[in-house]
Image (cartoon, one colour):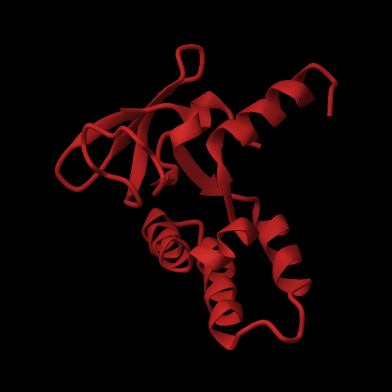
Length: 137
C-alpha cells in the first residue's frame, strides 16, 4: 500500500502511451518529490526538470511479495531473458535503496512484456488504499 506521505522518493515510470506530456518524458524513470492525492498532483523529478502528473499517468512497482509470487508462477517455457530480468528487479528492490530501485525500474521499462508482472498504474494502488481504509476490498 502507498499513502500520500510515503510518496516522496518513490521511483515511477511515466506511461509510454501517455498522449499529452509537456515535458516529453513518456517511458522515462523519475522520482516523486511531492504528492497531493486530493488534487491528483504527483510531482516527479527527472534529471534536469520536474513535472506534474496524475496518478493515472505513472507506473509504480507492485509489492515485493507480489513480484516474488509472479516470479514463482512463471511457466517453465518463459524465456530466460524475462526470468532473469524479473529476478534482478526482485533482488534490486530488496536493497531498499533509491538507486537500486531506479535501476530496477529501468529494467522494467526495457522489458515491456514482463511489466504486468512487476508494475502497475499508481492510481490502482491509491484506489486500493482508499477501499482498504473504508473496509472495502
